[in-house]
Image (cartoon, rainbow, N blue to C red):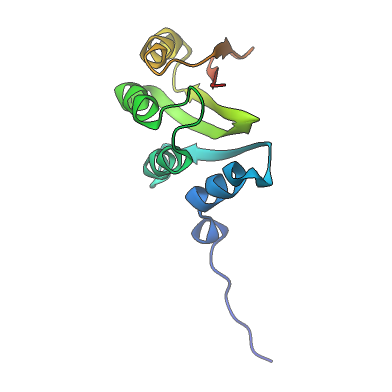
Length: 125
C-alpha cells in the first residue's frame, strides 16, 4: 500500500481565483479571508485588481486606502454582498478612526463598525 502526502490546505488556496469566480456571477454573497502573515495582503491587492471597476468600486483607490493603513490591519475579508464588500479587522480598536478616514477616499457607499469595535465594514454599490 502506498501513501502520498497531500499539500497543506493553504498551498492549494488561490484567493485571486476565488474572488474572480465569485465576481463572474457564480456567487452573489461570499468573502475570502486575507491575513497579515505570509502573502495574504499581496493576494488581497491582486484580488482587488482582479475585480476591476464595479459601479463605485475603483480598485486603485481601494488599494491606495488600504496601503495607507496596512500596518494597522490584522486581517481582511473581501468579497461580495451583491456588490464589493470589505471587512477590515484592526490590530487595535483605537485604529478604527484612522482606517475609516483613509477609506473615505475610496468612496464606499456604506461604512459600518461591528459590535467588537475592531471590525469595520466597507461596501460599494
